Image 1 (cartoon, helix red, strand yellow):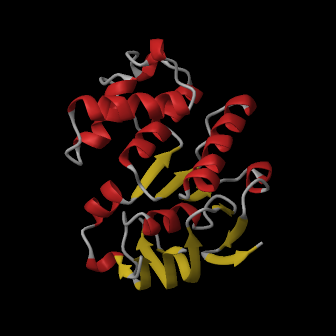
Image 2 (cartoon, rainbow, N blue to C red):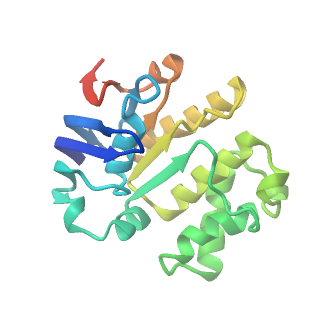
Length: 222
């Protein structure tokens, strides 16, 4: 089922020296139950496009729509809170919150609290391979792979249909990268999420259901 659609999307911004046409007339659709990869060289526009899909930026032209509603016509903070979780290369965990507290935070924003929230947080942490004895550890006490798995658990606990992952394995070794990718594949294929991965790694892209290539702001199916 189509959950996210970009239609003739363009986006430009001005840096210190020039106007950058980061995304140029991009159209594509994304469905639940599938994993997508967007590949391309640095500066090709792929991370900017992910920001548009996440509602962190609004298109200068065209539309990004979630279930038929344009992001320009919705509260994008609520859209990310309830529907589209973003996972970053540098994890973006709260350093003064434990692994458990980081996951609980996403549910607290939705008003899910107390025992029900704790049970769900525990379930999702265990599902991504975080052990019970690690629940009370702070991010600096966890490895990079463990921190990324906590970030994924946080997205899972929030119940978001869309997972937008910007170079989620960029700071990880091969073993941890494989574990993270397996988790993301499971989310789509077993839990019917829509997973979109920005990556420069052709091996990771090769594991996904569909690959798009971005060149100079234009998107094509590989």
